[in-house]
Length: 156
Image (cartoon, rainbow, N blue to C red):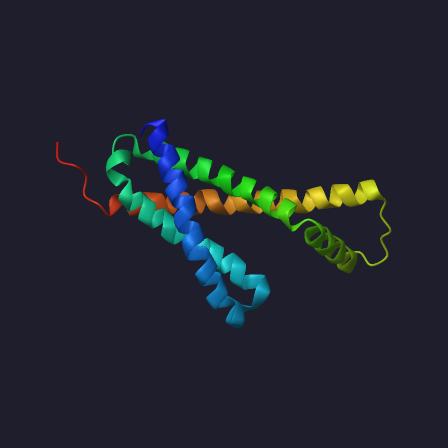
């Protein structure tokens, strides 16, 4: 798979994930709540999107399937991790307030300096990036592999 094909596959995977994620999360919030619905919705949408993209790009992935799938999975995870940083930056004060409230709930007697709050905020973002990396890479690997095996290989 050429690099241009990898980029198109990653862009397709990102777009399809977004198109699945929002409606799915919106439907799940009334039953699962704000804590679990976004997580479950995102995981399901990534898996479904990976299956679709694996199926669509299966012919391009046929030669060097493992390498192609690995490239798409890693680049997709990097794109999603970047989107976390952008999302948290876009939330601005709301993200900062959430970090403060969450930390204070866990450590009610803590009194932190501005620099310490800065470090805690970085740790929150780092933990989100870490969790996304360890969940997205395996999910996309599985989805892309299964999706690519659903379509018959091209005749030679």
